[in-house]
Image 1 (tube, rainbow, N blue to C red):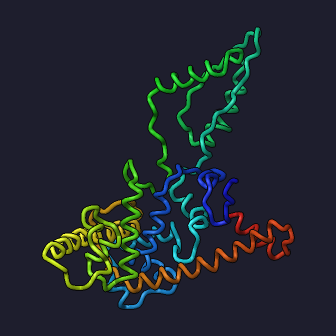
Image 2: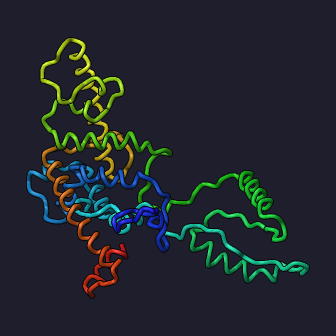
Image 3: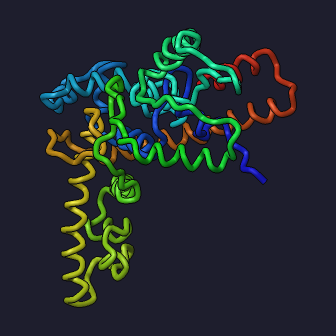
Length: 327
């Protein structure tokens, strides 16, 4: 039985909306989550909504204007579902502002009938102006496919033709922001995100406990009990805790940098960046408020979905459904 998609569940079609398309990847949601823990991005939200006090202003990095530009692009990430954020902000930021390239039928040549180039001009011109232009002048190849041959033979020839052609560089220069790097190590990045969440929930925990709980090391996380007594049972455990603490310290700095680079529009990147202090109790409060809001919002959308299925929507609910569907 196919899984029912909830209104907040991202789906394949969300990556290709009218005149916008992007390649599906988990990187977008990971960046969204790192923005939510970035203290500099939170300062940008405050600056754009209610203003900064003197304490806030003293914490501003020298490149805060860049963060403000990213806030204008990405908006508030605190009380919004990822799918809504993606459709309202993400796709327009990461996407190519053209239709997704597709296969087009340019013309059909009838059997036994000679055709001149002049006779094909109208069909070709229509494709070039109404197809290729709308797709951002995407690299394409025009081919003639025989219709009286076995499809399997034709497909084999098409595959060989495509294999022989050098893959052109994708023209995506119109995207406002691009994910960095050729490969996204999503599992490793999520482990780092989970570490920041854990640090927010347990700001007073020793580093070795955080590392053990966050499974940062295959060698040490499995042998250390994050809930163990304060005193080590022997010298071996004491050494393990010291090494785990060093691993955790490096990981925290790396993924704090990842969050702060995300606030500048660079993701995933742990390059050197001017860090704003991570006040983890405040981050924990924001995450808790977000979790509570998500629970209420999903319950609201569930009721909307039930009403939709029963076809007994009131005029007000109909307007709400239209609003949600548009996002």
